[in-house]
Image (cartoon, rainbow over all chains, first blue to last red; front, side, top):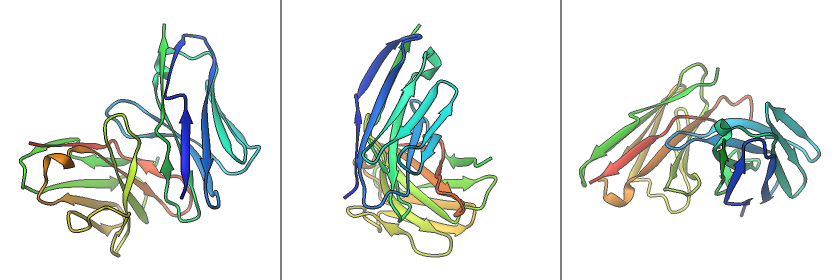
Length: 109
Length: 115
């Protein structure tokens, strides 16, 4: 069974204080690992897809990296608008996504 | 591009009634659509997968007679919660894929409250 564990559950940051979110996973044949952002009461917003160990992708203040067992989402110099829940999901060959419980990030001005 | 809409965004219904939720891909053809539910402070749980023109595949533990899914066209899938009960109250989210990439694009979600 595919498993995704995200840590920490919650992260409170001061504006400008960089940090990293962890996503550990076990999956039978990884097709892709996805990062989404979810605001309260909204659907997930796609951020990144990573396909192979060693791959990195960046978007504004976010950078995602992937190893064979985990992925990190680095937030550099966060702003209050980066406050959200960040979800990690793995996709095996059947295209279904298995989500982690998420990390809720709060950035204080 | 890759916009998915859901309607309604919020619905309140009485126990025992049925409610239909629509999921539309606005600017692409969705070969496959997925339905998830999310309880407060929990992650998304996949309920079922639907392919256009064929029967939906339900995840273990999801009652197919209670959660009726129809994927009648390449841009529309519907989820009908039949004989709803308070425990069905949840946030229902759909996603869609175009079959060419691995990404799933999510709708904004529908908040269902059963009184």
